[in-house]
Length: 467
Length: 126
Image 1 (cartoon, rainbow over the protein chains, first blue to last red):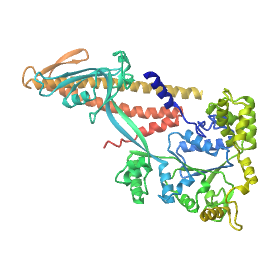
Image 2 (image 1 turned 90 degrees about the vertical axis):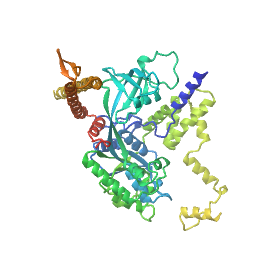
Image 3 (image 1 turned 90 degrees about the horizontal axis):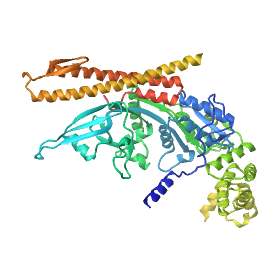
């Protein structure tokens, strides 16, 4: 009974939720940066992907910073997908992703929020090193004097696959060894500077020592090579993390609560100076990362002028932005501008545009999503779904996959068929049908009057205040 | 032909790295042996008076054994230990450079950048 329950628990832990872009594993480029038609979850958008690939390559070499890239295209053409793929390809540099609306909050000013996002995307690499002794315990011998008083002495024999040695133990080491309940066959690690003992697990060769073992016994290989080694660890922390740690009395706890508040510019200046000093001494190096701002048209004029200046900073990250707007009003002004971005700022950007998908590409994307959501679908149903996607939108069709799967399960079919698609198509309206329905029954909805001479937003405001 | 040359470079470097790794293990084994010896010598030195006849020990030097006074023996082993420590440090420094170069030759940027940051000075050491 016990074992059944534990195996179930393990299965649940393995379950992963599927997100809208969870099928993307990279940009799907070959060695020469040419896009493959269908690879790593990416389909179509060959030009955009190649452009993104070039940028990724340059970022990886650390050659650019303080540049900005705009991914522009109609809704559902894979802008966020490309950004996600870029983050996957970039790998070990910091990648921060925010939506432009996050900037507007009551707790923080807009510029503070943007500064934090900027600093979050700049990493600092530092190294720590510790001398450790790591090996498998062959024998522990602790001698007590006959009377039981007086200092204990002992010997500890450690081995790796290459060597074996005996350490004489003092009073303190004996104490911590007994406290950690170390016995022969354990693999342990001793920090040379502090004398701290860590039990890493039991050696595989001693796995048969006992007939039954507790659930928390971990088996590890006997270490190889030297007994006394130097462990070097490289950490990458973001400037923002250093800011938070230094800005408050509670220090790093604020990192977990997320309640960082505003950070004083003086603190930032000091940190910048300190880090510049470290870089000079060869103790740290700066890794400029990537900041992704989705829905860039939601930023207002102030933010854009701040970005304009912030990008010129020596420690600015690469900023990638995405927008699905065409000519639209810049937020906070009455001016129209492409993508809702001021012309002077647009001039600084490298622009990648995404094209609408062809029918064949849509079909491939739907197939990938089916695999990702573990849904079996017949060829005919796939054809129908592709038609639906072409006529309505790709997002709507993707929604129909999982809902269709549920309907198919209900009639106990293994595969999703045309009737399931038809059923969910009638159950859930797509955007244009919903609009159609609204137009027909408009009179029966509430607050449908639009006051002449004012734009829609104002009308909504008025209607809500009047209630 | 260029490819062959490149590959040959990678292979020799990789071989070199393996040798160095082996070397550092051997050095460490020697270091542990010396440490054990030092411990034994110190224990013995505590038991006997330095001017007594017993304050001598036999050391194995390659093919033959020699009798030396305890303090002299201690001094010799300590000297060897110091040399070993610097030799190990040397090997480690060399190894880091070689690993970085290998990553570069193999065109693995990620590993190269990690190897490069390994060359940083440690924060917790003055």
